[in-house]
Length: 296
Length: 296
Figure 1 (cartoon, rainbow over the protein chains, first blue to last red):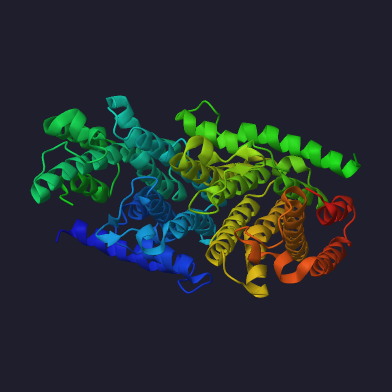
Figure 2: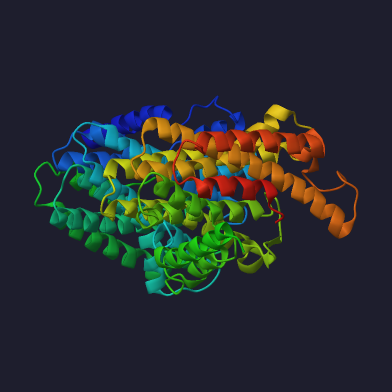
């Protein structure tokens, strides 16, 4: 295993240990709700967003330990968004990462409330970051405001709204970019911004790290679309673009394999350019390559 | 109209004007989502929670104008909770305050996202309170943390979880109190706490105003249960305790009319005692009487 992957794994484990402390405990009342919050939070996942918060803080000279509440709060927001997206009125998915989705285990009503509870608890968790020495209260407030906006109606929820309402329809490239930038990109990019803001980065550096996040957010989504297609062909052998519900709303459908690879090359090159001026940028260079070359 | 009711109306109008500014605008992209956020936010309501934030700030010497972002953020949380509670998987209500519920107008998927968006935007809105002169950033962070906890798994969502899972079952008095304290009481009580905290109230005063809120929160719920029964009898003449879905889980069912009135008298008297030591407590004394005597 490469050093980069070892670091990803090791930071991912730290995130999970901290999440277990920062969530309300599993046996608190009412028990089913807390159990469901833990079930969905600990159902796997690469913990890429919290790791980005932590490594962005490090890039600007702050030890990653100091931004863990914010990192974990963002993972709670990510988890809530998956629970709500999987509900029957949304994408209606029975499995995620090979495990039954929250509503398949706990029922739809409780899954809805579990998502609500994780989203709500995220902000109490991020607020706790102000209690860590060396963290400026105004930075915590900025981070709360920006995360709320990135996850909200003009961010992640806006992207999900357009995605849902485009289901089964032909969409144009602008709409596809809107969906990807908002549904996936906004939270990735604000993760990096938040770590940097807590570490005291300048406005110029904040802009740059955010732009880096926007680029790799798109890379992440385009590669996801490619993997979905390849996965489909390999595992069940059905023709590309057959019956998958949102098949038309993918980069693969609108750009084809070669077009996607060209986009990925351009976006990842821009991302590396943005990050090249910083010392100790190894993690972010390798992260970019990892997102380009990943096979899962 | 009494001076108290005039003040309620006039503050309610101010809250609505400010909500219209603090929400993302109705014509922002994606339009249906923003339209739905406005539809549910401006579907009536007494705006009692934001008014409590404002009057609690005044009680401790701060002009109410300074706590408007927090007041409006709490109203957004209240509105999201109504949208999600009305969904078919929860209470399945078609009307609220005489108007079709969010999912009846916009569909279930968009109603779910609209609730998510209001809950999310609440925290960006509260964070904005730090930009107002004379407000201490640490107070804003405390308020964000406490509101998140009061609205979360150990607060409002916990209450709703137990309420939903008790539907159609016999519950005991402890469970009924748990539901009421959490589902209704937690947000009312934290509204008062938040206004007082932003105004710089002492820990002792914060405890007292919170206890006042807990008492009037229970009064609010018990009177609600009585009105539900009376309303039923008057308007459709069906026997008490017949087919209303959660009929058994009410104070009226477990305590009867006389028992309820006794509880209301005791709780409101304790509330007034708690608030009696403050100068300029007229609003809170009259609010308590209003909650006891209201007929709507």
